[in-house]
Image 1 (tube, rainbow, N blue to C red):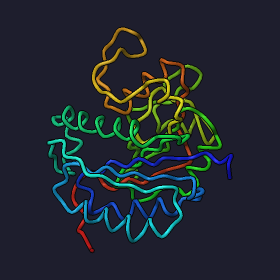
Image 2: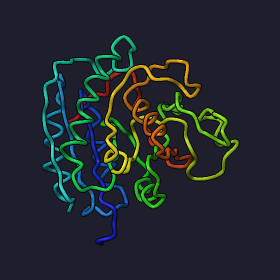
Image 3: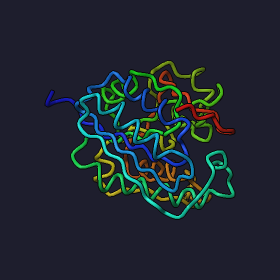
Length: 257
């Protein structure tokens, strides 16, 4: 087991009480070595019952298994936003500022000696059990699974890089028949090698020059990070056949304790 890569799963939690248990059960179903997985939840500024569900998931579900470590913390950053409003662009700056604080805290405090960090959203309905082991075996710097909401691509702003041509994700299957394919930029929901963080890269958001070196683009914290990682020479890949199902973006799911 000494040669098995150690994975830190980082999960920011905010107003996700209705979905969190489902996500945790999907993590438990992963066919990776649990003794090589560490899990950290950082809950911040929730106005629902996220903390209660989180305690239940840690104490009653995750601790039944032999994970390398499990931890959860609460932070108050002073940014309050209803879950169904998190993709309203009017709130993008505040949301990105909050998320990058949480992500950088997890990197700097919890990555430790783990070989990879995998960002998991707290409101996933389904995670392919084989994604983690397949992605680790593929052994690239940054790998993002497909994420779909209501049958549509959630990562629509990202593009594959096929022979130097940017190809929208929904067109990739028509041109590329492989599990993994090179990407231009990726979202946060990625598996990232620790050497990317050892290089000194951390999360930020805002304007960056696009691929033409001239046009300014606003990138959220995930694409911002991956864009700078690619400029630094790291490889970015997407996964065509590992499809994560994200809960619907709008509306609330009733809580059934």
